[in-house]
Image (cartoon, rainbow over all chains, first blue to last red; front, side):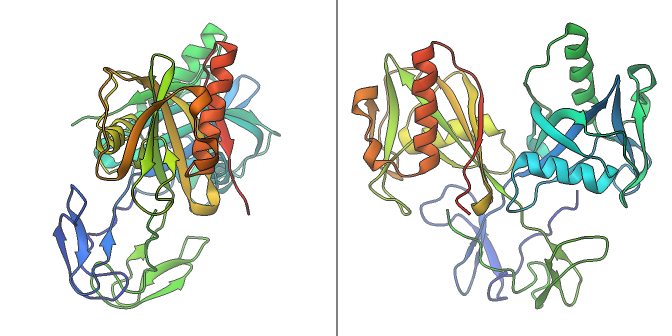
Length: 183
Length: 183
């Protein structure tokens, strides 16, 4: 969740920039004082997975800040040149050494105050094989009764799990949409 | 669709950068030679709308490159601090001076070769009021038989419309997922 530092210098020519509204635009951007390059900032997609094994799901205990030591679903920033589902599976492999053959979108959550969109997928672990990747302290399968609700890393992850268990109880999984905005 | 120029200089301190794999990472990033700031590049979300009025939908003829003079749905890059649906409605207002009170996600399409994710919403025009914004040459309501299929600006927009008319014929709109990747 590293915040990109302010665009004080032009990435392209190294000159200083000024914040102003470019011609034909309606909001302030960093614009290079020399070459005129305009720098846009856009929201980022975070994608991740709920992976099931029998009646359990896979959680990771974070080994990095923010929220080191708290539990989360495998998830992370989408990289260039991958699909959202590919990103969710890559993060799951990196953080939990776990795989799935088929995941479907389960929950899309806007977090406009931090300019992020969470896209959480649902699928089954392809085999009972998982272990902590470099960003995880621990990776474990949890039954509903053992979920560490008081030690969840992020409210969007807690919301994902609440929706999952609600749907599971109702016997039907659908796609959910929500916004978390504490502003 | 302006491509951000390569990160040759540090946005934060103006020094040169080098492309290398940072510690604890697994892919090349631009890293500042002086202050060590790492620059991440991530996919961008494009959001837009199909807006219905009676049996017609709203299309815009583009007045800007790329694909100036070709037809599209109102859509554009999501901005920081807005939800995906808010972005779709803002673009619709900017490009077509048109509004809707309620839109729902209809089609999500990954375009990994250009690191974009299209999120297209479906709703009804709140009133029969629309006109060309600065980025549009013309804005019109089209019946299915009048859609300018041979003059569509982007394949993802054509795909959105094909899915829309397919669902309309079947009497049921659902959420669709696809990937366009000509690589």
